Length: 86
Image (cartoon, rainbow, N blue to C red; front, side, top):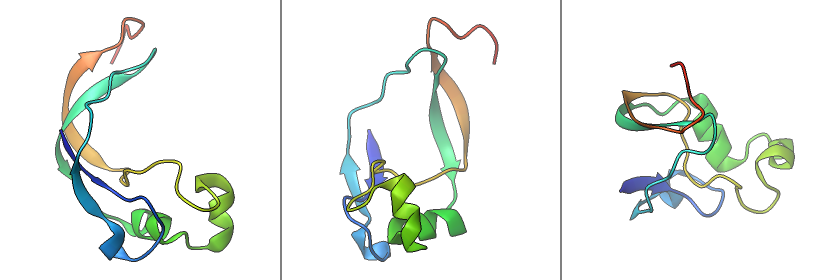
């Protein structure tokens, strides 16, 4: 599947479109096929590591999570075995 990823902090130029492995839902998770997404202030600040002390949570030298984004819409594609209610 294709995803926007970043491997270092910086301006929007650090974002790259790459082919990545499709994730498998863990216990109590669902896999959502995303149809639409947004870029918001939080995403912009996260890829730039602003404010600097946010790196204590996101990763000191590079981000722990390489795909930005917190808002999306789509449809549930796969449920883990432990999910009983959506």
